[in-house]
Each structure stands twice: as C-alpha cells, then as structure tokens.
Length: 245
Ligand code: ATP
Image (cartoon, rainbow, N blue to C red; front, side, top):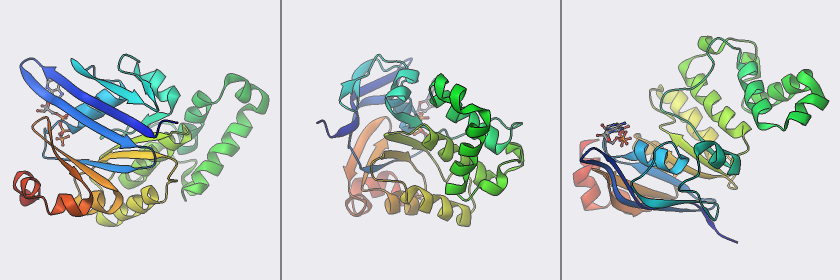
C-alpha cells in the first residue's frame, strides 16, 4: 500500500528562458493537509497545473496514488481521484445552484445510474448534497446571484461531488470577507481525513491553521518545508516572505 497521495519530483517548468518551477519536489502523504505558500509569481499555481495535468513540465515526474501520471491528461487524473478548484470560480452562472450540482453528479455518475434513477433522483441527490453544506436554500437561485463567498463554497461542493481522494484548493479564501473566510476555513477543516488536501493560501492564519505541513516556494524553487511552527520561525521564510505580509 502506497501512502503517498500526490507527489511532484524535480518538477521544472519553463516559459521561454524563465523557470516558473525549478526542480521542485513536493511529496504529500495520504491524509495530510499541506499548504503551499510564497510570494506572488513564486510558481504555486504552475505547480498545481503540473500536479493536475494542465501544465506540462520540461522535467520531473508526478505520482498520484501510487502511479506515475506525468504524461496522463488531466481528465484521467480526475478519474483517478484528483479534484482541483481554481482561483477564479468556474461555475455555470446562468444555471441554478442545484443544476450546477446535478451536472457535476451526472458527469461523475455512470450513465446507467442516471438512466435508472432518472433526473428527479439526481435533483433530490443535489439538494441532499447542498443540505450537507447548509446551502439547500440556494438550490433554485441562479449561481450569478450567490454572494461571492457562497460561490467559493459551491466550488468546493462541486469538487467534493467528484468523490476526490486528493483535493487541490487554489486560494480558497481569496477575496472573501473575514467572516466568509472563517466559515470556509471551518468547512475545509471538517472535510474527512481520507481526503488529502493541498492548498495554495495567501492568508497565513488560514494556511497555518489548516495545514499539517507548509511548503514555501520562492522564485520557482522550494525554499523551505515544515510544520506551521517551524515555518513561522524559519529565518529564510521570514526574510523572503513573512516579513512582507
Ligand atoms: P500568485 O500568488 O500571484 O498566483 P504563483 O505563485 O501562483 O503566483 P504562478 O502563477 O505559478 O505563480 O506564476 C509563476 C511565474 O510564471 C509568474 O512570473 C508568471 O508570470 C509566470 N507565468 C505563469 N504562467 C505563464 C504563462 N502561461 N506564460 C508565461 N509566463 C507564465
């Protein structure tokens, strides 16, 4: 049994002569919550793209749940149990909240499941899912009418509908008011430990509060890695990053 959920080894990504990731190794054991922090342009989103299969590295390898996936496309990694949210929400704004959930459930379910149980069952299941997240009252609202904080929660709900074993969260609390950020943080904290989480997070209170370990990127390279306590006391990290926050 392999207990590494997701790993990038020696990942290098170049845009022309510029190294967005330079020999980065990130190894996340199953069940861990890892925060990825670092200044703007450090290469965090690029590394997520490599892990999820949206960015092709010029060097290095990616392993997902015990298998090498470096050349596997994103949709195959998704089928293996990887889900990702994006900095900018990726929802169908004109559809209702429930329809967004239904679409995701339908895409995940085998065709025969939808066929046998029918669209009503799918709608019932969508409302059940929303209830688990205290969002059932929004089921019939068009997504564009949701507050921004609720849209960010819905993104995570949709990712969870895919039954992920590994969840990549790209700045889940970005742009949220403090109360919404707090709510979202507690929702993430309550996710089952069977799901490995890697999150990019600029808010240090959120990152250090949620993460078991923290990896720090700077100018495309891994600068430091450790527990929140170790990282917040690391002089290189303070100079490179925390000092300016
Ligand atoms: P932020 O915190 O601002 O989101 P980040 O750490 O996620 O930053 P990346 O988005 O990975 O950083 O970007 C790393 C560097 O690579 C940046 O300098 C960015 O301008 C550059 N970059 C990213 N994507 C491309 C691209 N498609 N073409 C050229 N340069 C790119």
